[in-house]
Image (tube, rainbow, N blue to C red; front, side):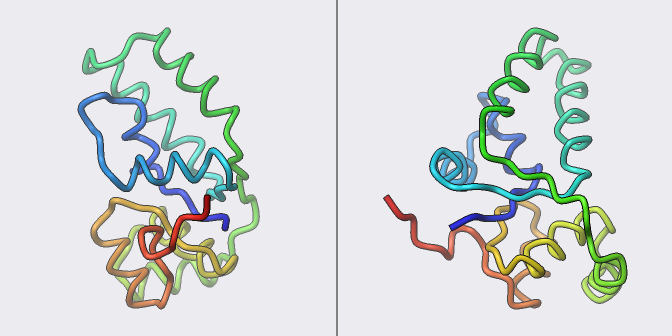
Length: 139
C-alpha cells in the first residue's frame, strides 16, 4: 500500500546519526511501494541537505549522491492540494500550512502518513488518518 512520506522521515536517511525505526520501515516499504509527497517536499529535502552542508555534516558530493538515490525511489509529487482543506486542517490542528499539506494529501488519497513530527502525528490521529507504523508491512 502506498503512503504519504514526510520530509522528517526522509531526512533520517541521509544522516548516519539520525537513525529512526520508522525511517527504516518507510525506506524498506518504499523499495516495493510508492510514496506520495506534496510539492513542497522537493524544497524541504534540498533545504535539509544544504543545511547539512553548512553544518559540516555533508559534502556537496554527499548531497548529489543522496539526490540520485532518492530519484530512483517511487516518490510521486502531488501538485494539486486542496487549498481550502489545507487551510482548514492547519487552523483546526494548529499546524503550519506546510505540515497541513502532508495531512491533506494523506486524507485526500486515503493513505497512511509517515512522519516523525509530533504535532503532525497528533493531528493525523485526531483526523482519523492512519500512521505508517499502524499499517502491517506486506512482503
